[in-house]
Length: 358
Ligand code: MRU
Image (cartoon, rainbow, N blue to C red; front, side):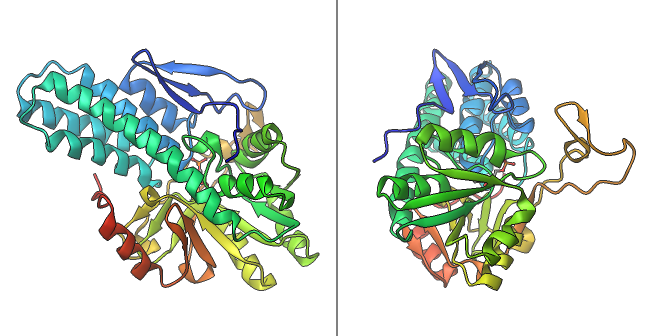
């Protein structure tokens, strides 16, 4: 098991949520204390914390922070207020299902013990958040182990966005596969898509790869086709924000481009994600709500204008890769080959059922 990385994306400390503020990276490693549900909402919305599993974990702690401030003593009003706070947190970002999944899980755990006093239920909410946090770390490690078996020796791997310890409790999803494969001595090179417009690849993935001592090269997103044409990519692996029951996968904008290119160049294209990213309530990817973000993310960066101020901008944060472009989905339960629906149903029958949408 790789001991690296040497940072903690999320920590619960002295009654507060501590996060590494990803907007300062890679320049500075700044840790922020979030002491209220409003601060957690803002941190998720403004991508101080980001990545599907990480926003689920932060959301669960945020729900605890919110309900801890409630004065209600009767279960009925306490629970309806808790639901209201969960809905508020869930409004911060719509695409990654991990957020609503984690919030629903906290609510369900509270509801299942409703005979207990409210003071105890507040503590139960915290314990559930801690469980979600710890469980994510274990799942990420397991994803890495399973995925590394698919990596050939001397591999050049192309990845998109950031899927590492920053985006999860620890290790990451696609990044964990790379970490484990590197530990097995199989990684020659990681090609890092810069990931326009928020540069999660160039700002965050390179930072994590550097810390882990893994060889990498940064490329602009539009260089991916040329790299593949020159036989410089052996496999592509990315994370996911929401996977529908049939395997259609929403992930960072540009992921679908890679899947189409992988098909054209006969390169395996893998998705790595824990079960908290699979949404069994959606039959296909058409039903996934795709977040559109502020035009300013495209027209400039860090206060620098890169386009005329007034123009039409289309800025979807995610796209959906149809399941038949995906070679396999790497989960903590192993590598899942198509037919995804059948395999997912088998897994979910053994686990806590995925929550309905909030
Ligand atoms: O907008 P972001 O940076 O939150 O998008 C993140 C991604 O698309 C990741 O690939 C995904 O959440 C998986 S992270 C393990």
